[in-house]
Image (cartoon, helix red, strand yellow):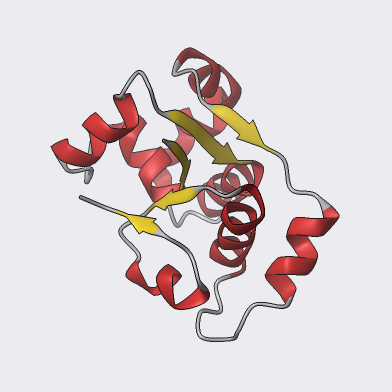
Length: 128
């Protein structure tokens, strides 16, 4: 199974809060191929800098190391993803989520997210 972690799923995985055991087990499944979007790095850093996510300091400082140690693959944002995100319906306006949905669609990935609204954009959302 190939999965793209929404930003909060990535953060909660490492911070140890908010992630149901079943979702953690899904992410830790040795057969799963786990991706994290580069846009998540930006979202975490921005919200940390603005004081909106003060606990995210370690994620900002160690993003690449944590990703590598967990055997996650970073998914870069390309022009195709950006165009696809821009063409999505306006039912969900969060630009970070729109990029993640566009990436998931383009790369045929399921999104691990608590945000059910992503499904309204056409994403297959997994949160067991």
